[in-house]
Length: 242
Image (cartoon, rainbow, N blue to C red):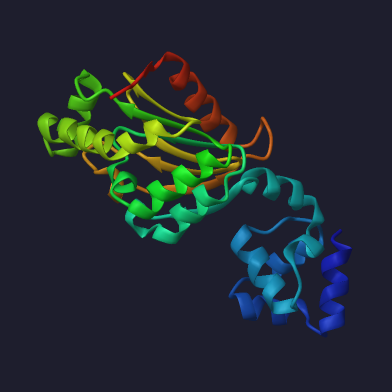
């Protein structure tokens, strides 16, 4: 028996027939909800909107499950190019402990003078800045270029261009660049507990692939997987110096 829903309907002076008509469902379905059956999410949202309340007030038992599914997920962007430039800059500018960049080239960041200035300022303020790029001479970079359809030479050139643009950072204490030989399934951009994860899809440039904005809340949250991945790749990569 769902007394919360029953009381809310009574307070709104609505009957099962009223709710059924508003949601285009059978009145028997609404009766099942009153008897304790939990509706599909779309119906929970619709009933909550109809009653002017929150679904957690009507079905408190689903709250832990809902939080477990969404905990740590702040936003999902359909493409990397859809992430506002200010989001990238604010991400790094908000770091107080560490900044981590893991990609093949991350050229779009290296080409942004404002981002380079922020990385310099954060490192000068004591923030650890770690940048992991693909080894331009490695087979992984070549394979990624082929997969994206731009060619191995072009992909290697992108990494070399990024390294040239990041060169000035090597003179800043607290900044370290390493080259990795890893097949990346995601590019990872971290500032303390805030993480942007750019997924990689075969045949699709990273700029056209989705990006998740995650918050590292605990060792069980979704962000912990990417934090561990970054750490593992960092420990196996070789230091880069100009």
